[in-house]
Length: 257
Image (cartoon, rainbow, N blue to C red; front, side, top):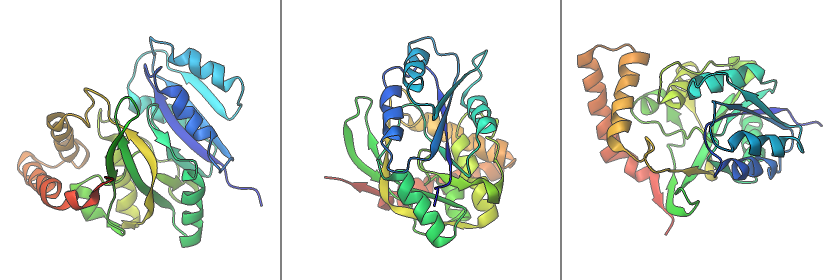
């Protein structure tokens, strides 16, 4: 039986140091029926040249170029418009998948009759070295839990188009992935992860993930902009968010040492 097509959404911008390895991690998947749709957001380095060279030898990789620098949201939505797969998956241009990632997740979706799943993942630094940290999540993640903490790594989420349709990426500048998963959980109420690490998330210098202040600022913007809460309610939500980060989430961050 032919396996269902998976569309992989990848925005790129000045990632010449990482993009070849990111694409290789997709090419090394044991699940072979995929299309990788890369939308470049006006890179000024050799990113586009590298992608063109690789895609010339693998027609599953498609490259599209934005005319003006527009941000990851526009790039992801452009890729989403081009997607033709039954499943939508996400992989940023500096992250990596383990070889069994797609196969295990698609099997998990089918076995449990689910429209959405994700997985645990590990953190690496800019040089690709392990930070000896695995990010896990509750085994039955509820909307309320996700509301106060984004347990779903963007590089791990997969959803079925026949169930949800193509879900547009939020126009907010940052934390688009969190908003995406909240939109999904609001409909299905709970989600189950594949309970093992299937990907590597790269933490780069000066990234939002590396800056606690920037992370808090953009999370607050989600409560104000996406949920449209007033200032007082947003502050109360941030109090719950901070409590989760300091008291609850640490039990889901596992040391690999």
